[in-house]
Each structure stands twice: as structure tokens, then as C-alpha cells.
Length: 202
Image (cartoon, rainbow, N blue to C red):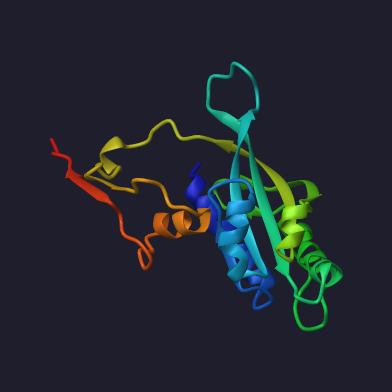
């Protein structure tokens, strides 16, 4: 089982389902939160895939079998209001339409050599912070039985070669400026110190 293979397959499959109805289909590193929302505003409407982990299918089993959890987020943004974000407005797709396109087609979808998705639930992630940004977000959760590989070839893994760090002393006055700096945007300030260390390879 390869988590990366499953993720790539889901992204490619979703792209064929939603075609040109969204701006972006991509993966996310973790659950939806306010920081993710701010980063992704310009990519909406969009569909985003997350591998959320999973629990062992059977406690105390001899192999690393798990019930993997995959979340597909649909996110829409409409200046014309909350109803348009959910229902669409004739010019841009709504969250309901994306869910109705994706959920039936992903339920039962088989990733060759890996496993089959089983639909679990849909959640409305509405809250005050999301609403203030003019966004609607729904999470469709799927389960997939997965087996983590026991025969990983360690020599195929890339070596850790370079450690790089930038330091900001004292911290920026605003969270927005600090986020720009963390993303490599130094247009308004530069790092106070930088380290880059090459790690010797055996």
C-alpha cells in the first residue's frame, strides 16, 4: 500500500469528475482550519484531499492493517452570499452540486492494487470564522481498508542532506506579516539570522 499512490489517484479521479467546475483540486496536509482557509481563498471553488490516518482493523493483529480515513473537502466562495455558496448561482458551482457530483462517484471507487473507498459521512464545517471569509466548506469522509508495507527498501529513501532555518527576532508585530515571512515573502522584512548546514553523508 502506498499512501502517495492513493492520494494521487484520488486527485486525478476528482479532476475527471469536476472537470472545469473548480479552480483547484489538490491535497492538504491536515484537517481544515482558519490558517488553511486563508491560504486557499484564492483557489476556490476547490476540492481538497486529506489522508486523515486510521485505526487498526483488528487490535493485536500480526500485520499493519488499518481502516484508512480519507476526507474530501469541497469549498466554495461567493460574493453574493451564503445561499449562493451552498446552492450555486448559475455562474459558479455551489457546495451542494460538488457533493452531489463527488460522493456517488467516489463511493465504491477502487484504486488499483490498493483498495476501495466506502462512503462514511458528510459534515457541514460552517462556523463564524468561515462565514466571515465568505466561504462554505463541507467534508465528505470515506474509509478504505489499507495495509502498510512491511518490505520498504530503505536505500530507496532520499538522504537528509541540508538543514535550513530562518530566525525572526523579535517576532513580527502582526500574524499576517509573520505568515508572509514563513512562506518566503521578505518584501517588507528580512530574516534576522539564517542557518544552512550540510549534513555529511556516510
